[in-house]
Image (spheres, rainbow, N blue to C red):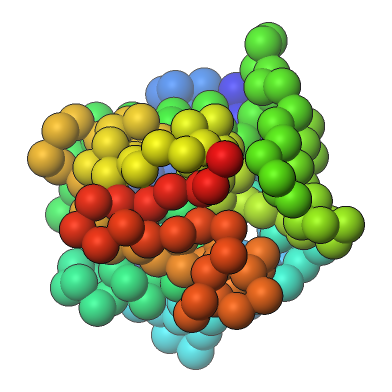
Length: 229
């Protein structure tokens, strides 16, 4: 069972999401606006946030940005659940720090699967991953912290999983489609490549001395990404 914060100013949608997640034995807290959500997240420390974008006064993008600046909850997984389905909307959401993105109208089963995948990454498992080192990069799976040549950085669970997968396959070019299947667990041909690109960009912004000329995560044009062994 996980504690999940649902944030949506549409009470009908919020109620549907709440009932769906409660049926899976999760504890669900609902906020109907951005300011209320930020107050609750500080009090409740949820395991996951399901967040709408189009809300009055403070939209979901701003809420997401603010969550990522809060030390105690900065790494909480965030799933955007929104009617804004254009590519540019998704890119904006990913770059704000969201881990995944689901558009309205949505299938309840897909919502359950996305929530389960995000929680699996963020919650301790019976067989935790071993620490991983590649060159100047060192990942600690207990804390989602990355040591880069002596500098310690905090990654979100999805950023951690993405970088861990690339480091585990160091020296190998990994395609975007493979990352969508192996990291996000999307069926073949269903994931959005922008999801990978945005998270790679976010990781580079944290770890690279020059994100536009990366040292650690290289792009191999038309083929994918590689961490040098």
